Length: 202
Image (tube, rainbow, N blue to C red; front, side):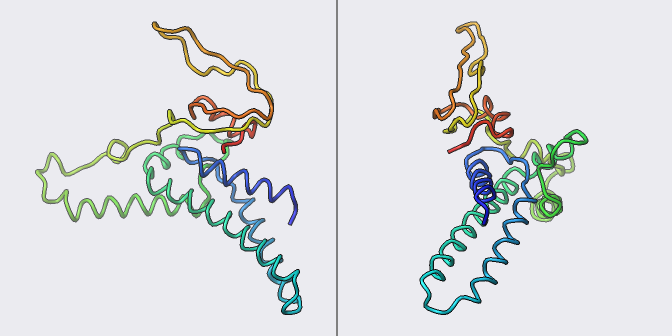
């Protein structure tokens, strides 16, 4: 397993786990990790039973599988929690911008939306007065809270990061982020830095 792929997998997992919003999908990385796991398991079949190397490799495979499963589970939980907003964000992205959803996630999200609307209509809405028989899912389902605070580690030095905009009560608050330093900041402030990889959520 290449160290670069392992580190990318770990970084994607931590960022997805700790960010309040759904991040850009890493389907190429997921596919590559799955291929590597299949290859590692095939190699493990050729090792003699009882060999110490086999148990160490088995633990490594289990660890990688856990990280991958947790990454996909985090994404699925966010999709289910914020599904109309996730679809809206995906539909409104510009051509050439990276996709937030893999094709499978996009199909799942559309089906989840359809099933939720069908369920609401059959269980509740058909029993309501005609003027209340529709529901705007974007208003009914809460948005991710981008103003929540996250811990982060700086991977690349950043200058003049606007932490708080100027208001009547205070002047604007700007900081420099030194490489290797750790901070607790509002997610909205550093969201662009997460997507570029300049900071790592922890």
